[in-house]
Image (tube, rainbow, N blue to C red):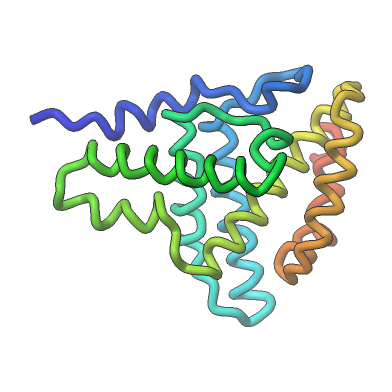
Length: 191
């Protein structure tokens, strides 16, 4: 029997993000998920190695790789619509859950138990770190667009930056203080 899970996962590259915004360069959910995984891993390392917490960097990175997997079947619903009101948010969460269940069903029974926590994250620490990394990735997209002269992202950058500060997450605050400004540099300035 042939299982279709990984063939569908590979299609993440066809789901574009920021659909309502004029983009200087297009970002898909596969690229986004990779960056969220890198950032979640970093945030968890900061939490564990610098701040003395117990975060698991490998688990956070792996969960981040799959955090938008449901969008393979649902598409990327723009944030202003997804969070327009509590009813829409709740309904979309249900659609995401159905999508994740469908994806799980495309794996051999023996693997479903291992992938279930990645598609339905239940560890609160992991959820918080992945959510922070997801928001941080969105902020970095805004920074890159503004660097390219695209003022379309001005308001999104301000709102996302405030959302990051409002999280009051020490590992995120550390990242923002020590790493964030370098994303505004040119390649020559990075060397």
